[in-house]
Length: 346
Image (cartoon, rainbow, N blue to C red; front, side):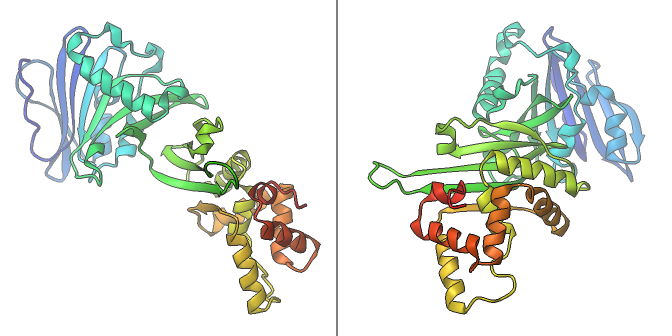
């Protein structure tokens, strides 16, 4: 094979593969009538039909070469991500971990540029800390993404819970399926040359896996990226358990309680008293966010009920005029972030 063939009309997925020894091959899955055809060329210089299938998944699964990425192979994919989601496709890839990680020093100089991109994306996205298995694998999306710099994604694999989770990076950051939860805080350090502010986001990056990503002064304080278990959507109780552990780890318990629990649920406060409380809560520059349906919220409240600080905040909000309510209000009015969120007022 001296020149790459043009992709067939209706291509959903194509693969151009080099081996470290110089062999090249090419594959494509394209729409064909009501189904999908698999085309291949291992050196003949022309597309050879490898079969037709009812759907995309069956067509891709029919050719293991399409999804197996071994050490010593460079795999450059093009994906119509309007028809096949980028993360769903990455989940189909098998990094063949028994081969070990790739060593760029074993590759010819012609691939130095591609390896430079791989190294930069993994380093800048925090992936190196996950004990990543490296392959020379990229996926170019044919749809127009919001950020054109994210058109081509790098794929690498992190060992996690007995399996290897595929992670995607582009434009020096991980590509998340979605943000699951976030925590932000800021402190005005009176008398100090500058204030402090930090954040931690929990983002879904692969089936069953999420990454906790610190930002701002959380990084300066030594918090690292962390790959964590996060069950699928059909297991809201498992998700709630994972979230409760994450909330405790990033010290977001106070803000999570304020977000989840109602203030004065029985309506005993006057409008003026409620406004005063809401202003006091706003006085603490810390916020929590969560994408959650009713079942997940209910389960999360139950899992957090074993945390002493969470229970105290819940009791204080439920009865603002009770002992815990008054103690929290005094602490809120002081504006002392550390005292409030760490429960020194208890």
